[in-house]
Length: 282
Ligand SMILES: Nc1ncnc2c1ncn2[C@@H]1O[C@H](COP(=O)(O)OP(=O)(O)OP(=O)(O)O)[C@@H](O)[C@H]1O
Ligand SMILES: [Mg+2]
Image (tube, rainbow, N blue to C red; front, side, top):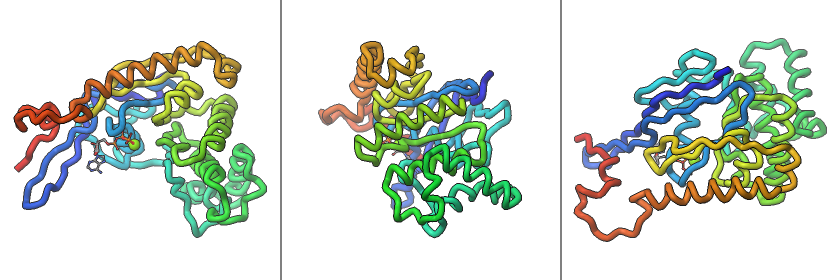
């Protein structure tokens, strides 16, 4: 069953260039994507191709220009508790204890205190932080903070979890450990997850489907189903490496095809392909 449906999605930003000049940057153009219920889908692509933009649009934080964007058949137009978001920089409430961070969305829902406590306890246990419920975020390591972020996003039992490079600022060892924990959480809860990363290995390790975006303006160039067992994932098996190689090649092709990444050979300005994406408004 389709959870998230994205059809022909366009998103651009208006940039104020100063001196009264404005221009438009096309971040996403004609993006099509379908995420099924219970699926773990990762979006990967060259830097600046519009991955975070895509996530912010699905989160309802940024508006989009045109196209279709449906969650469970309903149009997305603003943020909502049916979508849980986890950012790279944790974004925890520093003035609240770990438990109150996790309870936050539940209190927004107007849930009775007792139930808030029971649910927050459940999700703190899921991320193995039940013993840290009463401490403040500044006392936690980066990995622990991000586990609070995951518990907080999951506690409201959203229809879909949106994660933008959640492990991007963690050290390699912590990152590996959280990847395994997230894979285990997903196996246990079968939550629908859209995950953004720069890491091909992380994408292959976690996902059932990897979506490769082109250089900006981002659109889907290929969707690769990852048919690996749990054991093949955790043992970094040969088949896992095969997927990695295939994805690395694909992303490299996208970067090579990206005019803005090539050395500048002084083309006439108006003919530069990158300029075509910067449409002057005034
Ligand atoms: N708030 C904004 N205002 C104007 N332009 C923006 C804004 N956010 C993003 N952009 C532009 O949109 C394009 C896509 O940016 P985005 O952050 O979505 O890419 P990304 O794929 O997440 O990049 P990265 O891999 O570096 O995280 C970039 O050219 C960026 O400069
Ligand atoms: Mg980004």
